[in-house]
Amino acid sequence: MRLRVAVMATLLNLLVFVLLLVSFVVSSRNVQNDLIREELRVTCRLSKETLDSAAFMDREDYLTVLSEREDIAGLLTAYIAEDGTVVYKDFPFDIQEDHLRMLIKNTTASEVLVAGLTGYQNASRIFAACRLDDGSIITYAKNAASVSAIAGKGAVVLTPVLIATLLLQFFIIYNHVGRYDRLVHELMNVLEDFTEGRFSSRITNVKGFSPKYTAQYNQTLARVQDRVFRQVRRNRVVGQMLNQMHTGIVTADTNLTITFITTNAGKLFGRDIKDAEGRSLREVFDNEELEKQVTEAIESGSSSVLTAETEGRTESGAVRPIRLYTSTMSSAGKTTGALVVIEDITEIHKLEQIRTDFAANVSHEMKTPLTSIKGFIETLQAGAVDNPQTARRFLDIMMMEAERLTRLINDILSITKLESGTDSVEIKRLNLMDIIGMVQRVLTPQAENKQVEIVVNNSAIPAWIMGNRDRVHQLVLNLVENGIKYNKIGGTVTVTVTQDQANIYMLVADTGIGIKEENLSRLFERFYRVDKGRSREMGGTGLGLAICKHIVNTMDGYIEVHSKYGEGTEFLVTLPKAPEEERDDALLNAEDET
Image (cartoon, rainbow, N blue to C red; front, side, top):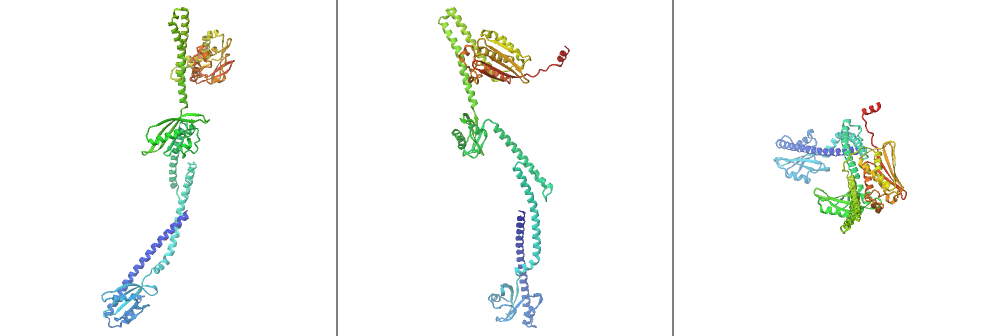
């Protein structure tokens, strides 16, 4: 590269030099020719004055002497009589040539005519003529200065100087360009490293440049590195943020061509989005509702958000509901495309279904006892109230249904508080064994009526947990009571507590009727009953196990069930162990003394 630059610069300078030389030669020729013209004019005038006044000399002798003078060497002379006869000449060409006739014809006694003519062997000459008093004409001529002659004389002197100058210039440019060529090469290597991600690369010391000079470039590269790093970090954060979002994002231009898409957008539609950017919405998603929303947003050009629901796909190919939020994108007041935010609303649909089912279940659970109570009231109003025995039986049944309604309402309130998380309760350190013993005493009469025995395997070490006493009491009560209700005559309900370094484990096992395996996954759902008729007969609301699950969740634990149909059921509750209680140093000293 530097050789090419040096040669081109040298040739350019040579061309400039030649042009300047030509201009100089032409100017020199013009100057010399002007001097020759003036010389011939003066000579012609002096000769006229001399010949007109000199009677002492023959004119031919004068002209011969004049032509032989060394100070006007190269002077050519001709003397022509008044009648046109050539009296004397030393011209090497015919004096009567056409181009001289005009000069002689126009010569007067009062002026000297000077003209440049081309004569013998194409030699350019300058002529001067004047008419004497006797009518004769004297003519002088001299070779004009030529470009070739001047250039030839200058070339002898200037050629060595020119060659030396061009060579010096060539080496100076070659070395100078070489320095910058090395610098550019180093800079390109650094930029290449930048493209490969090696942003710590810098320009090393370049021959011909001081370290201070290269340091300026490195400072600029450091600023570029810092800016690139900031942009890379920003892009990484934005990318991570977009990929962490459960929603998907797609942007398209006015031709419905995808300009940006996130991974989740493809997942929500169950589509492969590899190389999706630059392809059409129809080609990638094949979803009419999506195309319709984008088209409407682009055509409307408004800032409002369009909302629509359509169907997506899971990885397994199952249908899932998704919602599209579409808005217009614009720049400088001109619509450039549309932005679509894609949201999976499967959980929203589930929650809506749960709410619907909850309302239906509550209505159904409340309708049954209310219908019973209303029926008995109508019977009493019809006259049964006059029969004391019948009226007493009806009132007992109505009381039982009212208590069932009360339990249902209390359970609904309990589970609502647990799910909302807004119920503020006292959390403290509790010994689980104490609460189990209390529940055993409360449920022993009910167990004896069912001919079921409650067995508690006491732990030698206290089982300390963190929780609310009433909630833990309800948890144990619901599990043990279920074991009593769905047990066999002569069966047992066994409560066993174990622990390790991190957790407390409570196992409630019964020898009852058991649960079929297909019913186990739904056992903790609200209002779910394995045997609806038997559950209502025993006064169950269908919320007991759902309440147990929520209580355990609020305590950062978990509950699981294992059952074998016809043999019994086990509920295993795992709860975090409470931290060791800090004791006062004075109390410890007192214990040591005792």
